[in-house]
Length: 95
Image (cartoon, rainbow, N blue to C red; front, side, top):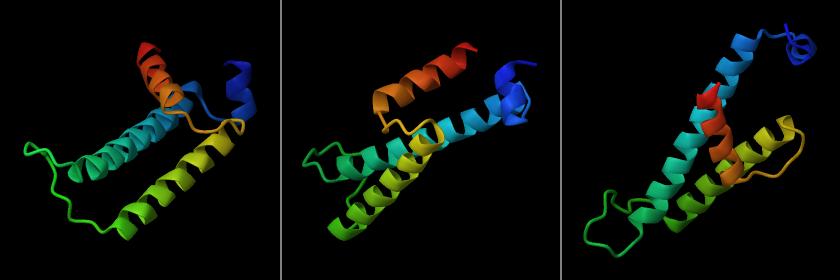
C-alpha cells in the first residue's frame, strides 16, 4: 500500500473510484454548461433549445462554480482549470 493510500485510509482502488466519479460529475457539468451556452446561439443547427431564462442560466453557472471551487479546495486549493480537469481525466484513463 502506498503512503498516499495510508494517509487517506482508503485503498488505491477506492481512491480511483471516487476520483473517477468526481471526474464524471465534472464532465456532466461541463456538458450542461456547454449545452446552455450553445442553446442561445443563432445557428439553425442547434442541438438544444433555449428554454431557460438568463437568471436560471446565471444561477446554474454560479452553482457549478461553487461545486468546482469545493473540488479545488479538496485538491490543495488550486483554482479550477478546465485544462487541468481534462488532463486529470486523460491521466485517469492511463492508470
